[in-house]
Image (cartoon, rainbow, N blue to C red; front, side, top):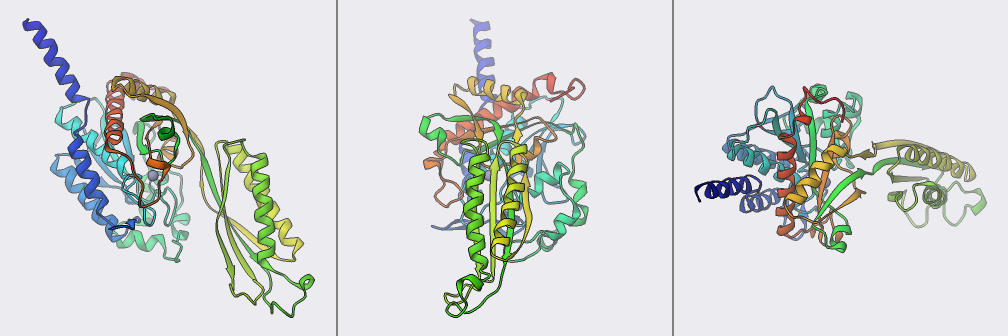
Length: 437
Ligand SMILES: [Zn+2]
């Protein structure tokens, strides 16, 4: 009887260790959503803005009041640590910047899920030989520079790129960083040494319709798409829309239109079938007056594919096609890549732990690719990485009405907590034993 009781209380203790505090998680999601929120219009919280810095200060005060160490790096990433500063760590995180008019969970959920894990480790006095860090990577959404925080951490950027980065209104990244108290010229200090991060797990809403349509609560990501954005500027000559004959025109928009049509068809024909994407989300025609021939047309093309080789080929072919179209209409064209993220495969070792955690929490799951970019694809270049998805209502994200029911948010956070516990307790992730990802 006595030993049975002990077994039962040990089980209860184990159960308690493996669950997040749901009320606290829900409350924290609500508070974080209030920074930059305009009722009915969603959350606008770009990196280094006033609302972003208020959110950062609140996250720090929450962490510190829980007895955890909170610190920023040189580019503005925020880390919350459980365990000694000089130990390597297992990391989980995401971002708290938003697109204009964004929703409450994109990025925020992964950061608050990771902080909840740190709090649970502290509360249950988890005795790990390595540390755990929750990360809020700055500038994932790329107001100035796509995936700035994770790229700086992975050593994938240069000072030149930081100096050149501007938002769509022309405001420089350098100024934004300085006004928030960071020193852009010290960006290299944000780079982590190899072996410093033993594993990375990111919790995120799916931002697509797959999990909801299959009625499955958990997605385990096996690979993340790569993406490239290329800006083209077609330049011709303006003139009177009535007096200049059609065959004597140098109409910048006509050349751009033929380029868009041809490049789209080529990308769909030659990219990975069913998985390639291309979008022309920005087209600016100047001077933009009905009776004037356009002398300038700016086009931004985005291409996504899961194969790096395909991406390289598709970008080269699109640039060549822009030149062909420009020649046909006697235009000049310039092109430049404005951002690039490599496709990434998730680590089979990390993914196996997430699968085990899903089973331990009685969660149905599927393995799936991510068609959206995430910090995890950058961190995957320096540490074994994995991702956990939960369903997005209607597949909607990057909108004010983005939603996920709390039962899924809680379940996903419990899968994250269990994944981290399994990794922390597995000596194979210990740096003294680790040989390869
Ligand atoms: Zn995100």
